[in-house]
Image 1 (spheres, one colour):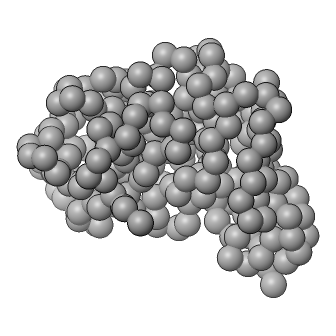
Image 2 (cartoon, chains in turn blue, green; image 1 turned 135 degrees about the vertical axis):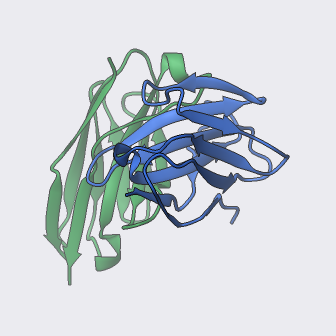
Image 3 (spheres, helix red, strand yellow; image 1 turned 120 degrees about the vertical axis):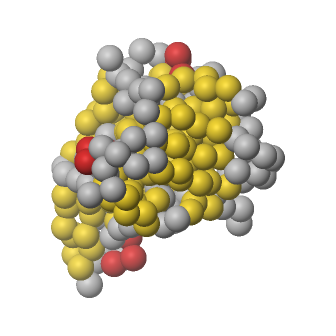
Length: 115
Length: 113
C-alpha cells in the first residue's frame, strides 16, 4: 500500500536554529499538507499546498515557516528560527484531490524537540 | 468558527464490551466528516468519510454514523488490538478547495483482554 514517508523520525535542535523536515508524498497525489501535534493536544492544520503554491495556511504558519516542493517527489517544511514552543510532532499528508472522499494519507511524523 | 469536540476523552472497555464514541461538530457547510485511528507515535490512519446526515459506514468491528450535529463511532465486541486514539475531523465548505481538516482532541480507547 502506498505511504507517505517522513524523515527524520526525530530531530533535536537548538533554539534559534533552522530545521528542515522532509516528506515524500504518495506519487500520484497532487495536494500536500503539514499538520502538527503538540504533546497531549489536538492535531492542528499548518498549511496546504497545490500546484507549487500555498492554497491555505493557518495563523500558526507565520513568517518563520515555509514550504517547498524542490523536485517531483519531496515536500519540505522549513522553520527558520526555532522556538521552544515549536516542539511537536509534525505530520505530512497528501491526497489526490482537495475534497478527497478517501481522506488524507498521513506519514508517521517527525518529532521535533527544541532545546 | 468551526469546532469539533469528542467525548469521552478516555474509555476503558473489557474485550467484547461494545460502546460508542461521540464527535460533536459546528461547521459552516460540512464537506466531509472523517474518522481516523492514531496509534502512539504514529500518524493518523484513515477509517471513514461521511458526508450527509443518515449516512453510515462500516469496517470490521467499527461503524460510523452521522447526524446534522454529531457523529458516532460504534465499536462492537472490541478486541485489544482496537486500542488506539480515535480522531474525528471535519472539512468545511471553504476548505473543500484546500483540503484543510479541523480535528477534535480524540478519544483514547483501551480494550483489556
